[in-house]
Amino acid sequence: MLERGKIRNREAGAQLKDFSGLRFGKITPTDIDGFVDFNNKAFVIFEIKYGSADMPFGQRLGYERLCDACESSGIHTIVILAHHQVDAPNDIDVASLAVSKVRFKRQWRTPNVPHTVRSAFEAFMAWVEKEGSR
Image (cartoon, rainbow, N blue to C red):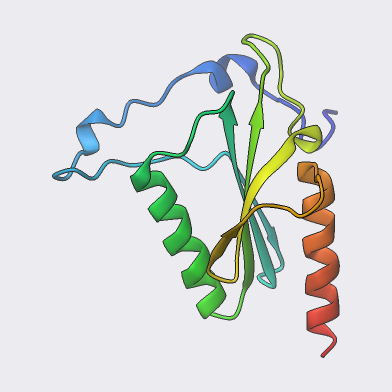
């Protein structure tokens, strides 16, 4: 039995998605690198970029709107942006990546102290638990 969160089908994971047939004017789909739903109480969304790559304008705007809409509905939500330097075909250990920015409470924030994806995730969930007890 495969451990949860591990790569299950490497060949399928390597397939690229072609969204060119889904263009609507200047709008095309984007993908989400990771998403966790904590019983509809909190959402954590991940975007992972190689090197120093920025999110394209439309992708950033999409994440902002998604995150803010979830927050407006009462679900605590963050978007974690992290970068890596891992060349293909090597696997990326997402938990250990350094966090570049976080979308939270309608703002992009740069962490005051260094965070890995895992530590940012844990800090957010600790905040959610604290907020939920109020």
